[in-house]
Length: 98
Image (cartoon, rainbow, N blue to C red):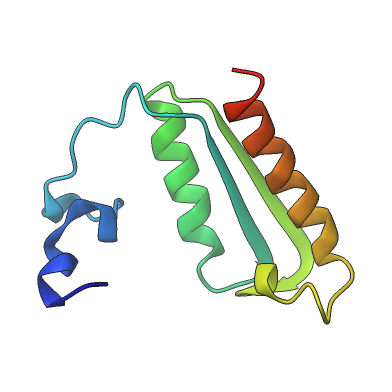
């Protein structure tokens, strides 16, 4: 966040309808990773559903046994390598295979 004004931007919280979020149709494909033990995983599910409802391609993956911010713990949690590989594959599909 650059400054407090960024909180009024719809991209800060795209599920918050009071922020004036634009039409969610025709967005790029989304790959959303959530963790089993993350209090925010329901928000990831809701965002994926909102994108799907607008007919966007969405891949939602919940990683079992993981906690919030697990994606940054690759040096400590070997299972994170699976999430890194999945993210790499999604980026490859979006940019190389497109």
